[in-house]
Image (tube, rainbow, N blue to C red; front, side, top):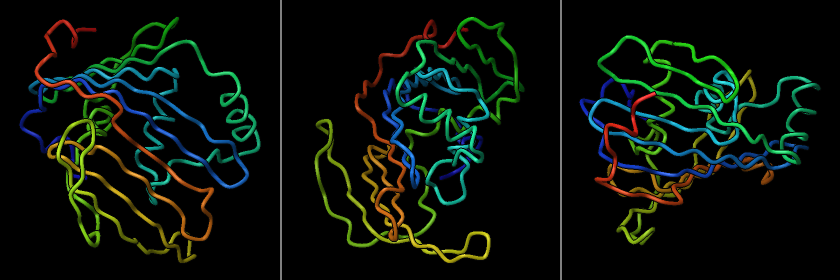
Length: 210
C-alpha cells in the first residue's frame, strides 16, 4: 500500500470496516471501525476501544495477517475480548498537513502523536498499491460498485521460515473493498478487512473535529 503521507488528498468518504483475524489455536476476533476522510483530514473510530499500539501492530504485521498475541497473557486477553467486547471506543483525528494528531479513548484524557503514525489507520480502506501482482483479475459488483477481483499467492521468508499466503483483494478505485490474507498451510490463520458500508460526499468539517 502506498504511504498515506504521499496522498495529496483523501476522498470525501465515510466507510465502515469489518476487521476479522484468527491465529492458530485462537478464536476469531471481529472489530469494526468507521473512517471519515476529507481533503487532508481524517477521523477514525475503533469501536472495540483498542490501544493505538494494537491497532498499528495489526496494520504493520509483516505477513499482512495481523499481529499475534505475543505472550500467554496476550492469548488470554484475545480469548476474553472475543467473549466480552469492549463498550468503549478509540478515536483518532489528524491532518496530513499538521505535525500531530489526537487520540482519545473513552474514559481517558486525549493525547497526541505524530500524524504520520496515525495516518496508516485512516488509509486502510484505500487500495493504494499492491505489494505483489495478483493473478487473473475479474470484474464483480460489491456494494453496488463495479470492482476488480484479484486472487493469487505471495511467498516469502519470516524468521528464516518460508511461508505462502493466499491473497484475495477486491478493488474499486480508490477503495479496497475487500481483502483476505490466509496462510496456505493453515486455513484457520487469516486476516480479513472489508468495507461493509460506504458513503461518498457526506463528510463535513464537524465529523473531523476532536
